Image (spheres, rainbow, N blue to C red):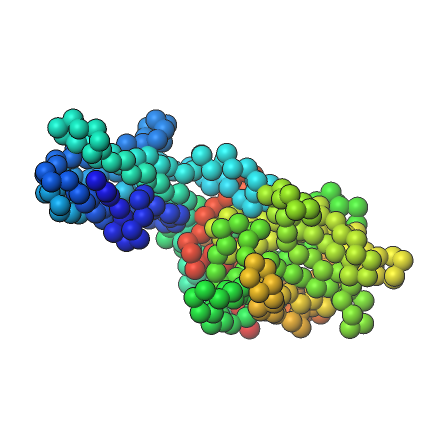
Amino acid sequence: MFAWDLSNRGGSLSFGFVDVNRPTITLRRTVVVYNDSDKPVQFNVQPTFRYGDDQASGIVSVSAPSTLTVGAGRQRTFRVQLTIDAAKMGQWTLNSGSQGGNGNLLNAHEIDGYLNLVDASGNTANNIHMAWHVLPRLSDNVVANRTTVNFNSTVEGLPAGTLQLRNRGAGTAFVDTYELIGTSENLSQSDKGQAPVIDLKAVGVATFPGELAGCDGSFVMQVAISSYYRQSHATGQGLFNVDLDIDRDGVYDFEIYNYDRSTTTVRDGRNVAWAYNLRTGLQSAFFFTGHSMEASNYVLTVCSEQITDEANGIVPAIGAPMNVRVWAQEVQLANAMTDMIDGMVIVPLGERYGAMVNDIAPGATETLTVIDFGATANTSKGVLLFLDGARGAARSGATSGNEALLISAP
């Protein structure tokens, strides 16, 4: 007796990772059963769960025909339906940073079991057991009524404009805001079997006084990078690099990049933002990479002392512009740069555009307010919204292809 998934001829039913962005998600697979004996066999079809708490949660229900008869030397198909109830799901707690090496945490989100086909005559030699599993994440799906802000009002005497953001998803959107400083077009992907193009979409920045993040230096800087395609883990096929020419002499001084916390061949699993001195080769990592797993957004955070080299006269300061480029790197096959956004300038605590918005509950609409603080040397293009922010240990999921919103300023 044999059974397999019609879609991939595998011996298990993998429903994979699922963005649960509607109240109910229904997934289906077709199972093929082949009877290689010379007698017909009637099976009782019994979907089961691996763990009782997964079944008791009610998040997932599995249905299939109760019986199936397969003639001698024949094959039959039947459909298995898996239904996910968003109302019974909790918040996502996986990430590539602080929990990047915590495999046990997967048990809190993955739901699995067995599809048992039991010979009704009692002949256990004919019984078939097919594993099934699904990894659902409660996800938002936020849309803006416009993609350009009009500064037709004021906030405390400063030019301001508003947009409406509506969450059509099933999960609350944790919205993080950055100043948009660079964008890139969607590049063509390589042929099957070739190294993929790690494709940049947008770059944003947020800077704050260093004391707010426990830094010894004067400021902390977050570089927000959005790509067009997801990675399951930030320590994956694509890495992101931020080159800083702090004294603007045409020579890059530091590189910020995301990588595993361990620099040896034994990996830690947690992804961090490294600040690498391009002159001395010294580097440091104070913060985990912001990445939700199975996501296309990344946040790299550094303190100003991490990008300081006093011996060589490299001292970043509040209000002093630095030249910036961001490039993506494919590291598993070609180990090559695949995309770049160049010509950007960051002024610490000198962002022109700031934005304010509440987190957005499912079905709700919130007002995004954008304020123009006045032109600086920043390459200010508008605001960049990440829709999968962190609130404590939890992160919101965002629908694939809609994990970041770019709002341009005139």
